[in-house]
Length: 354
Image 1 (cartoon, helix red, strand yellow):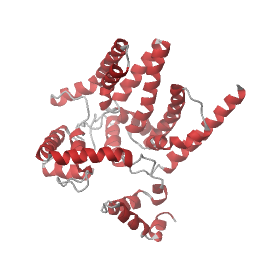
Image 2 (cartoon, one colour):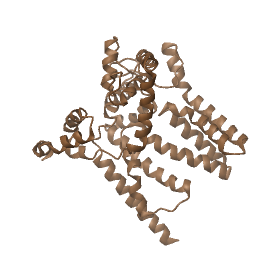
Image 3 (cartoon, helix red, strand yellow):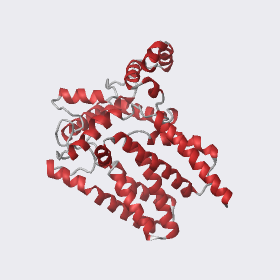
Image 4 (tube, one colour):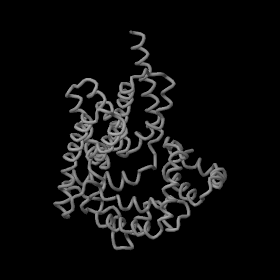
């Protein structure tokens, strides 16, 4: 028993060291960086100034949903929101691994540690997605624990996790619905699962009510999500290479189209309606192109791999990496991209850090 306990301590020490290395060397990540500094932090700072939930321009914000914004407030008060955010996500990511092993009832092995690379890489990004991945593990754990033990406290924990989850990413309000469908198909005793999922759906709805009520009070729209859905839907059409719509799948596309229509921010409710309409027109005007786009995305899910970090940025710096990426994205062919990278002068890279 003492030997197993000692091995467990060594495992989690090595795991924490591995996670710390990922967090440290990925601190200059560009993934979601613009969202964090141009949307999330300004709103949190405005809240502390007493200016309400407003964006960098001082206008009422409906994007992003407020869960991750509230997380920044203690960090801003302490004067280091980035460190605070990553510290919380680091600790939570370790706890997530603990719950993972309890959920699947498997023993920790040292060789497992490397397989947690994508998980820790995602958790090391200053975005709600990292916390969501941890909370989904906790959600699954408490769901299984409740049916295994019938302890009401596990149900309460499950409710709490779901309430936090939907206020980080609003689309998880549909999670109980997908669960209901899954259990209806695969399990015989459907009634007990239907009851618990009905309760969970109610909890998710109630947890999102403050956001929906705020939306209605401001612009008479009942909104259970953030107002970036339309822009994301539209620019994602450009994920199909050389698409006939001529859409480039970047935020700059959304900003340009919004500006052309007299809208400063593409993530406002007004812009959301515009992009939803443009998306409908694009799809109805060329439905076959949309089918090709969906097929392309389905293939990319399996062929593109997962996020594993941007560790070169630690040595290059964000500025140089952004310059390289802007040039790299001009090449559609992977071979051409590799040629471009191989021809980069070493003194250009060295000058940033040597």
